Structures are given as structure tokens and as C-alpha cells.
Picture 1 (tube, rainbow, N blue to C red):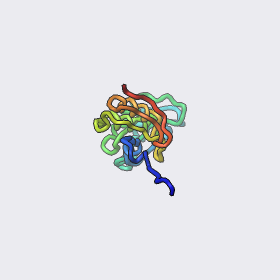
Picture 2 (picture 1 turned 135 degrees about the vertical axis):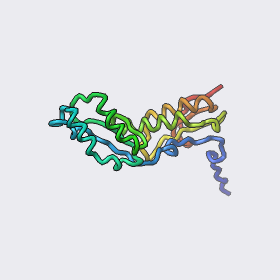
Picture 3 (picture 1 turned 180 degrees about the horizontal axis):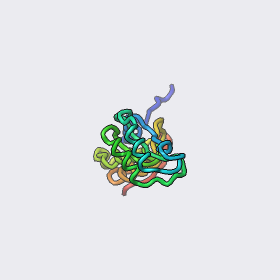
Picture 4 (picture 1 turned 60 degrees about the vertical axis):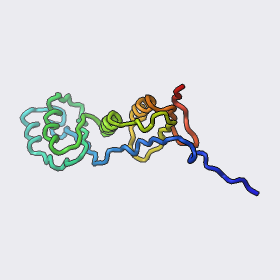
Length: 168
């Protein structure tokens, strides 16, 4: 007679924390201002302002926007600030940087406001694999926040986890 197979993972008190569950929904847009520069490298204030005024800002409704300049031009801070003032009524969030830096900023906001009290004194595994672009810093921030309340924190999957911290 064969022994019954018991799924010990499903019977454990282990709580899986999946950063993908906190992925901010919405369109991501990378906005390159290089096209608004004279010969792609010189910012002429009057011309730049004309480009800003002529741009179709409603196209960014409810989008997350990463502002950047793909040329080697030196962009004064006020230029990004000016663009952000036009995006403000439409975009959910605006950052200067790449799409990866945008994701990092979004996750930082999410994790800072996250209530982890439901993980108090529990063994927690932070799920490692994701299909969405979860930035590496999000794992660090989640670990730091969760370890303050959890009994233990691991990384990976229940069948093959890596212990990170265990409170005594």
C-alpha cells in the first residue's frame, strides 16, 4: 500500500509575499527631450519653451512618465521642471531617468506606504520569480520592512528558499 503524499508547504504557516501583487497598474512612457534641442545638443530657452507649449500633454493622461535626454547635452534642471509642470495635470507620476528608475520610484512609494502588520511574528517568504518588472531595490526595501515584524524572512519559493533573517 502506497503512503499518502502530504503537501507540507500548504499546511505550513509560511506566508508568501509577492511583490508582483503590488505592481502599480498603468501605462509607462519614456519621454526624450533631445528632439526639442537645437541640433540635438543645445537647449535654447525660447525654442525649448515653444516646443513645450506645442506638445500634446493630454496624451499622457494617467501615465507614469520617465523624462530623459538621449543626447549628451547638458540639460539645466529647470527644463525638466518646466516639462513636469505641463505633465502634472495628466501624469500619475513623473521622474527624471530611465523606465527602470521610474519602476524603482513607483515601488519605493508602494513599499513605504505598505502596512505589513499582518505579517507580525510569521515566517515570510518573499517570492523570487516575477513576470512583471520588479526592480532589485524593491526586494531590499520589502525585506527591510518585513524583517521588522516577521519571525523569519526567506527568499525564493517554498520548495527552495534561502533564509535571510530569523528573529530569536
